[in-house]
Amino acid sequence: MIFGSALFGLFLAAFVAATLIPFQSEIIFAGMILAEPDRFGVILLVASVGNVLGSCLNYALGRGLMQLRVMERFRIPEEALRRAEAWFRRWGVWSLLLSWLPLGDVLTVVAGTLRTPFWLFAVLVTIAKTGRYVVLGLITLGFLG
Image (cartoon, rainbow, N blue to C red; front, side, top):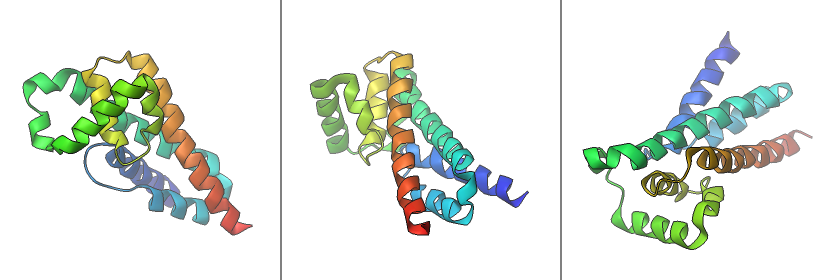
């Protein structure tokens, strides 16, 4: 029961961390790996799903809600938006492989704004977000050995 509650907390942390709300999920993820190393797979799955779904919310904001002026409430710094758009225009959809970086949250909004096909967005963001957690998890497990 406690592990299930912790997984739910990890899911929420990973989801929020992927949105435009400043938050970090890595410390919770690493802490859970340290506490339950035998459950690495399920911890990885929950964190990855939460983080990808948070990015999907950003995509939706960029895709459909820009015209509703919802984005004004999130106050994306103009400089961050310009940099993300420049990355996206230079590197195209492949820039989504950097969506795990701090600027990545804005990249996911830009992907929606520029009408990136959702299936391609989902594949690239899943690779990026899951890859980050895999590396962090393996580093964390290395400290156990």
